Length: 365
Ligand code: UDP
Image 1 (tube, rainbow, N blue to C red):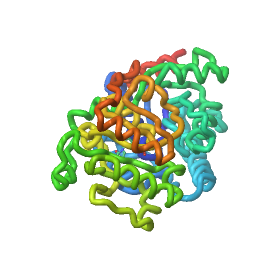
Image 2: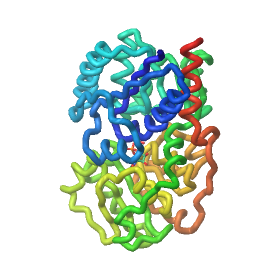
Image 3: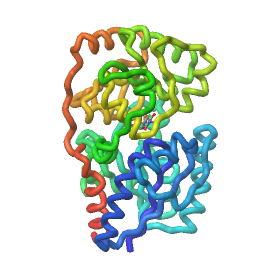
Image 4: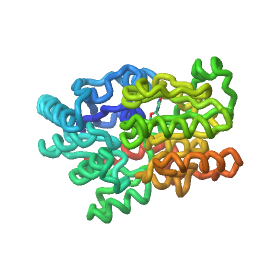
């Protein structure tokens, strides 16, 4: 029996593990000798950042919750490592599967590797080369000790080859987040705010901001938001606010008639809103991939991205974090000059199946 422990800690992780678990369950129905244990580190613990996704995306309840929420980068990393070491000792696995680039990804991969347990990383190899982002450090550390790399793009493969990873350990399987998107597209649900604000398709924008560079300094956040709301032709801007951003936002006294702050939304309602939006303004990584697949214009307030295909192939454009770049980007959007974009190879909804097929070969190989 192949025993796998799957790690999930934060919102984007839940969206990535859902199809993986469903593909394992399907393999189990076909009598594949594979067993999994789902460990939630507790990094995101707010119901709106965690529980909602388990219910909506039909993710089984975690077998263990390490309850390691809050704290600084180091405190959280340490807490997760201490708790996961105990967890793995009590419940040994042959393989620990980590996803994405959050603190839990890095902390659990270190613990697994030091316990002589093989590590697989889903969404391996992507790089922004920006070490001011905690996520980039998480990616680099994780990939330096990963055994099996499941990648989303050819560029990720290339990054890994350049780091000296042998071809046999790189598996180009596509984008697992898009499995979730394509599977749930028919289930997208109109949020209450759509009717209460009398929104109509392509007549509003969606905004999400949570990266430290944009939200940790009140004056920066204020300027960015003011520049956005005054350059959107008075269209409503819906802003589901990340807890990190909410912590600073309330003290800033930002308000505009067309700015609508809402709580973080469930996956099905959020993506309904994105699908019908005129454009999305964001600093998220995952959202740039989802807008690319849905063909929705995406303006990214970052200077770099670990997902350059969303720009070179998709609908995303990086405009940096300088507020002066916002008005020209929105002008282009409102003049109807935004690029159309296409979908990168293997972002086709079958990534999880490919990963599970590889796992059985790894076991027998
Ligand atoms: N998302 C959501 N509700 C929201 C905002 C985002 O369900 O209110 C989803 C979004 O569709 C995507 C993921 O959360 O799948 C992105 O998470 P986040 O931006 O926190 O992380 P990043 O991708 O930047 O690591």
